Image 1 (cartoon, rainbow, N blue to C red):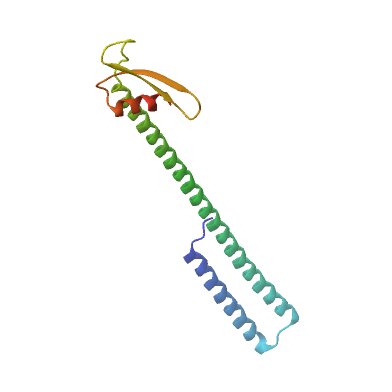
Image 2 (image 1 turned 60 degrees about the horizontal axis):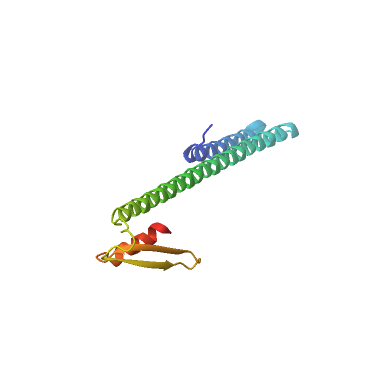
Length: 150
């Protein structure tokens, strides 16, 4: 049972009205001559009404807490999904950029071909790359080869 704030407030109002009615009826019985049994009965009824309202309030608070937890979990899952999509898109863009750079790399000329130079690249890992380039090759193309090798 989902208790809204309005229904909860109405329940408290009803309890107050019931309490007032019981109190009035109690005070009016037998011109104020009350027995111990009537007093006990009234106290039990009031206690039951108060307990009922406290129970409904606690139940309402629990439901609200669960709803907030579900919303937070849904938001967290959505954020994770968005991050995953962004990471996939970034990876796809990197791969596309590498494909584009590879397409600009010319074929390596044969050894001792006129109009070509041999360049040795040494990486910080100690790895060496020896590659021949046409003399018309730009630095950007050489850089693309290094990126492709890494």
